[in-house]
Image (cartoon, rainbow, N blue to C red; front, side, top):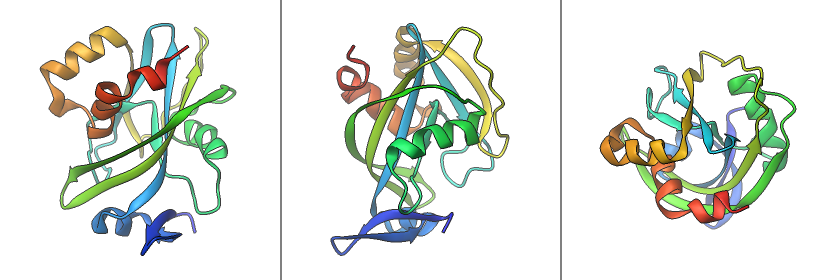
Length: 172
């Protein structure tokens, strides 16, 4: 069941294989985490082996809960699996829905539970090379300006989150 994620088929939530979800453009559950250090956010560049949006920059963690897994359990699990980050307290910031073409005939149609976490200055990380090509701490103002200059370098969901949902995600 590791590749089965919660998706709606004919109005009913059921487990569907992850790649099939994206091929069919099914609405499905997702989790996104922004790891912050003051006004800087942790970005990951997706591994080149990813089946969609390889090599693009995204927020610290964007994933799908497993079938039967809560978003609150998924967020720290995936921070550990993708980035080797442990011990952060995640804070639920709300739910965001979006639909975006991610290339190669694949579609993300997500109902996303968004979390933030504040990172200490000397946080240990061990990015999983199957998931992450590189990481960077980026000032939010610089990130917004860079997305404006070169949007093609960033995942559709990161652009949507920052364009349409900043006040929800980052409200103190």
